[in-house]
Length: 96
Figure 1 (tube, one colour):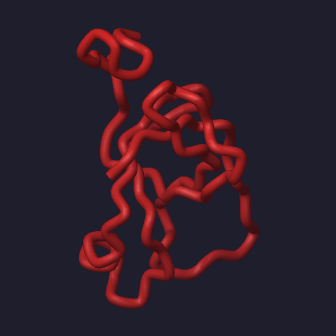
Figure 2 (figure 1 turned 60 degrees about the horizontal axis):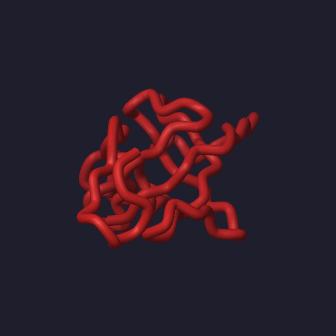
Figure 3 (figure 1 turned 45 degrees about the vertical axis):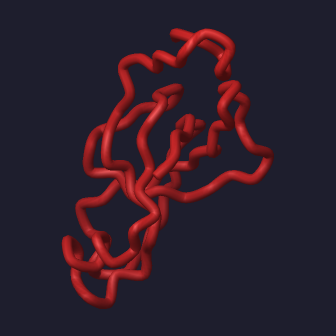
């Protein structure tokens, strides 16, 4: 698992049948200092995350397939929307 910032949504006119009802989001993984990675990632979302949200991302593809069907072509999913991050002093960016 890791934290990511949501930068936008992805719209597709055709998608795999197991992904119906899932929103596709564009996110960027965050480092310990809260800086976003350069490379964007596509995330499945059923939590209702919005642009600018910080989210918890699961990398457990087996969990996605258990929930959406054994043939779901996905691995990364939003499993939580972060309200606040508290780090010990001197570790990363502190409270946000």
